[in-house]
Image (cartoon, rainbow, N blue to C red; front, side, top):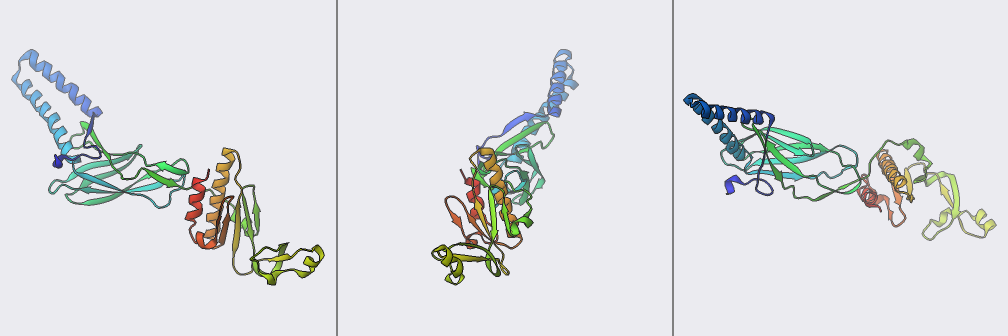
Length: 300
């Protein structure tokens, strides 16, 4: 029946609350007392109590029917960082409002006290993804104890997404050390540019600027040597990612690399990222390095 459409699998689960169990036991006690004594007042009371139980089930079923929940996946999710998962809840019923609705995701809840007919309300549930990479979207349910609180009735919600990409955990790092050179096993940051001061000499490679060839050193060594200058104006950083072999060290390296990268970008550095199997230019990274974070999230 379309009017009683109930969630993902069109079925509502029911469980009595503590108050509901107390009321059921009391109802049975009154029923037995009525049978033993034949008292009409007890029969009347027992009948009213049963009608309350029946009415509670029917009203809560209508309250949950034709509730549409749409999941708005967050664009950037980091491991071990609370992330608000946004939901748009719509009451598709034409004339009947819904009351006391709660969205529950593994114990994290968002409450809607009143949802008028044809109305949409937006709410969010903070959730913590524990690891990087593809994570299953947790199962969501929407439940109610309306109208009397005797029963908790819930339905499963079809969110439309099975997995969500989670970036590595971000931690605090000392970016000041990365202004010139930082090397901590997994991250090497090196500032180079076109300033006045000589930073170092290296072998000339194809594509390098021939104006920067250091001819005296080249004559001594017999190889073309290139001058690398300190960057006086632009702030450019080269990050090398050297993954460790052990899983524990690798996770720490990935987290530190992502944290350093974001910290440098916050300070308006132009960052080039070099990994064992690919390279990301500053134009690819831009102001928010989603390609690099995706690479690190799915590495190995």
